[in-house]
Image 1 (cartoon, rainbow, N blue to C red):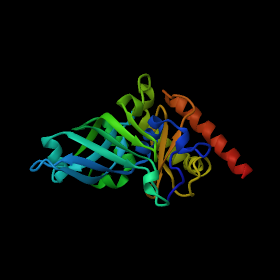
Image 2: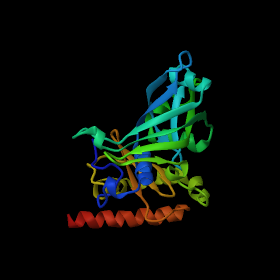
Image 3: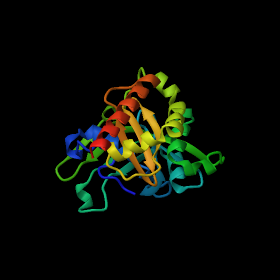
Length: 255
């Protein structure tokens, strides 16, 4: 299953949003990324594939084992980068969007990292408590965005991360919000995908909420839906979910 322009509302195109916003969409929509580390024995770049989630502010999260070569590399040298590929299977892939985020990969024991990663990568629950696995975050130092030919921009951390100051009530209620939407409003979640993002129907589920919007996944695809205003509380999120559900139903009725 694949959706056109994943994470970008139908009334917008990738060229109409800023490089920073395009990067945030790419990162929030990613289910996997290429991780580049420095091989301990030779210093050569080593690229591998990891599954991905994002913390509330957009910091990339991944879950890796000490048995893996990339983990051994990181324990020796924390410098790393992640390539998020937003190109699709049609046309020239070099004309599509992608971003490389560079920084240092460090272990994290934040409850939000575990919660958000497992909500997005449900299969990882099977080994979430294995002693050789740990959650890591890539602390961004800079990013290099390519949005097609002639659209190449270097970005700073503030360009790609979301300001969460003041959103502590929303963050504290994150698990309850996700559970409530998936258990009691699954039909609305599917409407967000089909009517607001042009995605095929299916068992879409909410995986993350943050001040700027929310993320949903289904059968190997992910979408990003933005809020119309910065949301800092559970009630603010509820109001946005209600507004978007009404908008989706209106569009469906006029189709």
